[in-house]
Image (tube, rainbow, N blue to C red; front, side, top):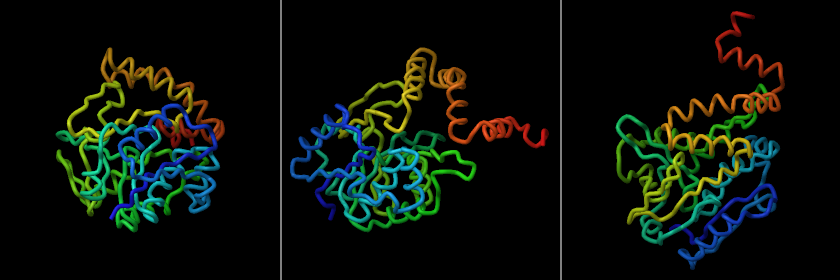
Length: 277
């Protein structure tokens, strides 16, 4: 049985944003008989594994919560939402059915879908797949050997693990190791790039993409990409934005791994490192 507790993570000690407080109020509205529990430095062990410790030292709070959410549900059970998820409907029927996650991008033709754990999670204690995800994270680092940061998102990690355990490229609700994976319309009706929102009778929540893990400059460039995307299409918008934000990305890389390693990294990307070596 899934405990009636909604967990959320808030590391770093900053005040809760207005959007987060609004989202928490929506949880109270549609889950009135649930306990809401915040997890932070005071009740979660930051040194539980190398990945979490390194992410915390880098002040990348969202990546700390990537691991924390699975640890929390594995050990306590319940529900988890990112702090920018607003409930707009009752979820009792989904919880009664069993553990769940949701697609951020649906399966379509040859395009693989992606599962985003931040949209909403539900699980009983000691869920097998959650244990597998924790084992995966226990074997990786957030800080790479060259000093750069492993900012591969939890979306990619989780989707790959689910695919390994049977997630397939087809539409509709899927069940992987006892976890129901719901289509995008349930928990993610807002398009990440365009901001367009399509509510259906199945929609239970809206993910507002607060992007708390990104720097202000990254959010600015993302918004530029979204606006361009509405005018000229996603593909062209992404190319143009990559050109515009190139100086920022170089500066960010230098601050992380130093000038010499950044030059070597760029030469390697261009395929020139071996020729010059």
